[in-house]
Length: 68
Image (cartoon, rainbow, N blue to C red; front, side, top):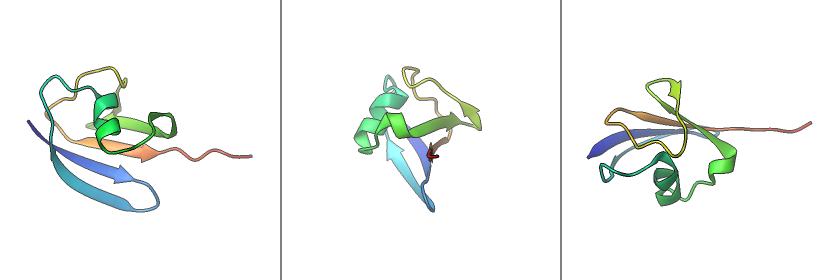
């Protein structure tokens, strides 16, 4: 299935991707070479658990910045 992915990390990168219907968000991050510990994943503006299957909608990946 095709999904639209937006990556917010110091800018916005958009791409359309083909993923299998049983892929999880964690597998999606792995295919993009993104460490799941430094991002939050949203589907239609709602946070999703990484072990959930990717929906047919758009996916937003937001890099989390921490520090003190």
